[in-house]
Amino acid sequence: MEKPVSKIPEKYSARLENRMTASPESVTRDAQSMARTLSQTFGPGLCVKEILPRLARLLRITERQAKSLFYGEWEQIPAYVYLRLTEAYRRNLEHAARQAEHQAAVYRALQDQWNDPCDPFSCGASATCDALPASSYGAP
Image (cartoon, rainbow, N blue to C red; front, side, top):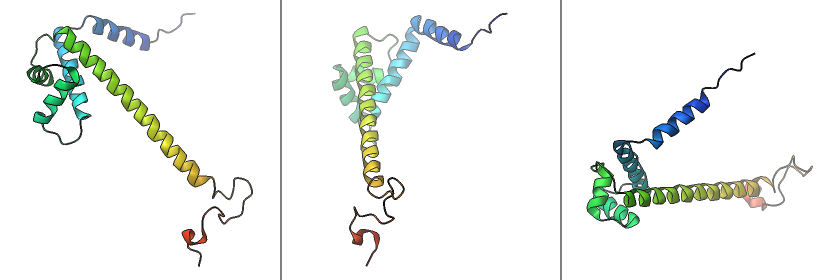
């Protein structure tokens, strides 16, 4: 009895093979998209004249190199620029993940704080909440 072959591992291995033999053009496109993603973290509504110096400072490159990277003008990106870009991109993703975890923890704490003292169904408590003053829920 033959086992059916899964298509999923083949897709992942094909993707890895394509990534390992990436052409200079695809590396340039990837670098351009990473640079544009990084520039979105600088703040909403910034013009390109404000983005390019910030990107240059972040990657420790000249503003002309940052412009070439942002617009995808390079045919081949220097290795040190690409390595700095990938490191900054990875740090940005880690920071975003930590920030999302923090926001989730804050919302969970607020939800627990709101639900716990006033839940009449949790431990057989009365229908009125003793934790809040009477003025907060409309009692005279």
